[in-house]
Length: 342
Image 1 (cartoon, one colour):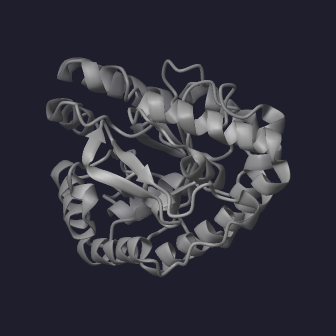
Image 2 (image 1 turned 180 degrees about the horizontal axis):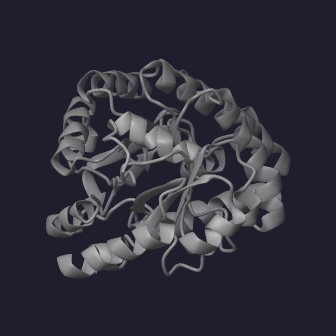
């Protein structure tokens, strides 16, 4: 048995394939209504981190944060699930061939960077990562005009609008993606400078058959993703999150990150054991956020967690859900998940 490690030491050991005292564990989700206000979100994030004694913190901003950098407006008094209602863009229709960069000091992003500084001051040396959406994910948000802001309704609108843009105006889409990538790269660098140990880079339901085709992903996704990730290549804890079911698993193995997070249970993706045979990255996952965590009993959560730990082993494995926890996940289930790791 190795000596007890600090949270930072434990995460670094897991990422590097070194000896562990135990597998690191964390979970995350939208903290409503705190996410509306940066100071409240900083406090709620630290409280959630401490309540469950996680090994690292994934900062989970509101989903609209990146589109807000270009002036998109949302009604934060009208949420459906975890999505606020879209209100307007300042310049509609947007000429995508003339899209300009978002300023890193725009009020929304500047406030979020201050949030990261607050977390750095309060987290006690443990590692944390800043969420950054992929450029294509942000373009989908900017282009979409959902009338239904449920996750299913908005997601369908965003994907359809993005795909129509890249298929009918490819040159304009390339320009917009380049501008967005440059802006997100600057935000990622500023996030690390503010104290984050890396970024949680999220491809939101686009690297799969009901999003981009594989050829479109190679053309309109990866080159711009790499631009953001390469800007923070020196960070210690960059994570790629490939969101959703049936993802293009093999196409994401060369991303310049240290770890990969994905839905490994019941969603048409490789499970942890299969992933181990394919990927050289540290693996973050193992527990089903849509199934047992949300709908099971604490006893079932504990059993699933122990099974995930047995499957993941103790080398380059960090236990976590495959995506954000729904706000309806019972606290008793989160507690059972955490307490099964010792």
